Image (tube, rainbow, N blue to C red):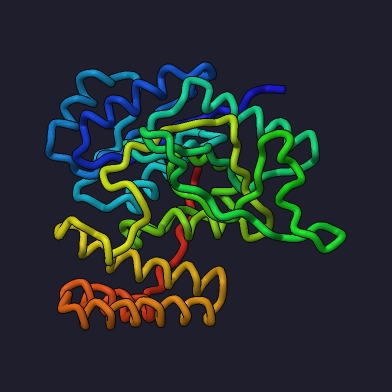
Length: 305
């Protein structure tokens, strides 16, 4: 059977050194990528010059006029890959270092599932920190089998785990799924856009985590995102987007009740922060909840691809 055309899509912003490492790992794959698309979110650290010099002819660069965040970057990158004829899109941030056989393992898993008559909503890699800790762990899909039991363990012997949501840290999605479910939501800007997108993709059936496909995520701030423990004052404002985006994802994919419960939990957290005199962080959460009540971006589809 002919192997599908796989395009890697990498989104970057002002992390030239990390991007160079990411791209070096991509071109060292045992199963080479058929195309490489880099979305540069208006970097001003020499990234554009490095791409034009060292990667001319090896990567297609989509240079954004302004920083559109990860969400805007993946929206543009997925669109570009579809228009270039990609049959599989391998999505990742610029701080992902893929093992040499990471792509080969994803495609082998897809073939194994196809032998079962299964078409996964998406495939994602097993992700660890540079220190070896699990990170970016996807959420297990707990849909039941014919006997009424959760079916997530059905293919554990092959290292395949059904999941309902994952992150853009080595995520592979098929062309047909993009055509059917649309593009990532660019207005989400940052944080939570990958959760919404994978929940959208897995609405009718699960994605799968592939244990044999391994990547390292070199995160600037390891650990779960939480404004309570956020040490960087410059990043505090981004938690407004996170709060808003999670409310949107829960409202669309889990129902109004789930969205309301999450919003209430953020307001309680804001109250606790205010009692400790951390007014700025409390205000970020309240603003995010208010934004979430009215945030309703439309899904875009890639026409003419």
